[in-house]
Length: 136
Image 1 (tube, helix red, strand yellow):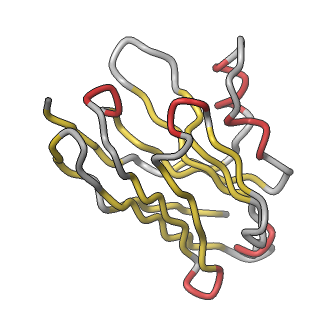
Image 2: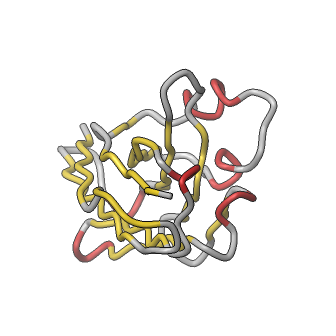
């Protein structure tokens, strides 16, 4: 089994920065090195949407259009951790941010889609989420 725990959420002003972290705990039969990982977010009344994804070794990343140039995803498998550096925050970035993971290649799952439910359901493992609030 895989457990994901996020941290680093909080409040920021428009234009400010926050850094989210996700630590993975893996059970027998799993290795963090085998997990494709990503960040999703959700606001009340809206579907979950992909933010960014990173391949198992960290050499490949993808971003949804609305965060390109502002957010950066990274990971450190020695620490079983993934990060999301968020700069240039906007009020519309306010959401609960979730760390997600799956053993399959997942980078395309965070790209703009007409089926956000399927994109989110692709990921087997989810964290509990961390709130990010950006004041205008």
